[in-house]
Image: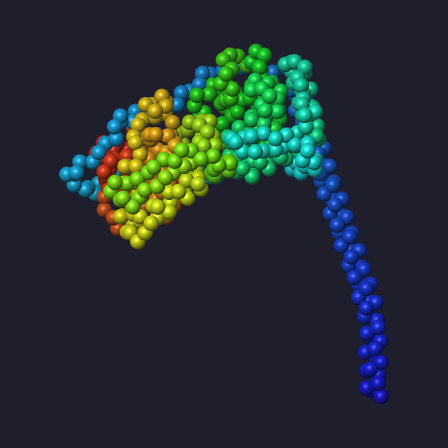
Length: 491
């Protein structure tokens, strides 16, 4: 009897479970549907709130723009500092005996913290327009496209404050949101630093308006920069609009205007007038532009003529190096800076590393730190022809690392920056730059016991390594540099 009851229970359970399961599944699907709807409603509400806030901000910005602009006078550009490098690099006396001298220094320039790129005041909706509506252009020979139709060209009726405010209001239309989103996406995809992003927007605007002097192109750049989170001002000089860019670093060779104690640089060097009417009003959450470049722009590759690099002392070191001409052209637009750690921090491009590093890695394989560092320093000392920047360019112009393999000559700062990169990447050792009034060298913190001229920095021993002191091994400092206090630059 007990067995029969259990049999009947099993049959009933088998009949009822599918029904219960169906009801449970139906309830769960209904729950998921409700959750999706609530999330969709929330997202739509959030997007509407963002849009309402952006509209409010841009409307208020345009209202302020209608008021009279302030009058300012510009200050002439500060020329790039001249470094009186020696006409010929010094050569070590073969009879000179190694020394173990402490090298004096007067200050330490700390590491520069990475700068977070500016962001829009609120998130920008992703583009939903078809590709057919895209405007295509080349940026350093790299194909780019943004959603910007031919019918979206805003035209200025004049250069009065109201004319400019009216045009701003048209740019602030929701039709331009996909353009902003596209530009920010290109910034990420191409790994653009602030200066590169600025050049991207300049190229886009000028090609869209088919003019390098278009006032509408300047206003479009201003609009895209503010919507991207950058601090920027616009000014009138005669019948031209001009972008003014504040920077915490000196932009040599650019004139500037002092506004509330801050330098705003005039980006258009063709503007020769000194009187400007400026719209000086802050956009919410604006962030100051930086010259820092932590990663290299990802431009299409266009090979330069290969340069043969070889070492006499180490015949196994021989290579052909071609670098990206598009990257070289971009570097040529970069403002000259005396922030040496930025040049070192930018490193070599991957293309250059692929040509150079395998050869050097084979040469130093199995060597002690001293031998490996000497192989690298001899490569930098002997593989390049020396000439001062003033002789080669007519002004001071530090190189980013790839430029050493394009231009016919380099000087002390170029060699020291390159050597610091090679030692960091290939030996994994800590390097600092030694900045003297007329020279730049390096010092390396070896983990093996190596004698030579040295500095004690934060309780750590760094050995002097000078890639411009021809024939000198690591640990050999120039006599003149032993009598002058260096500035230690961490990288």
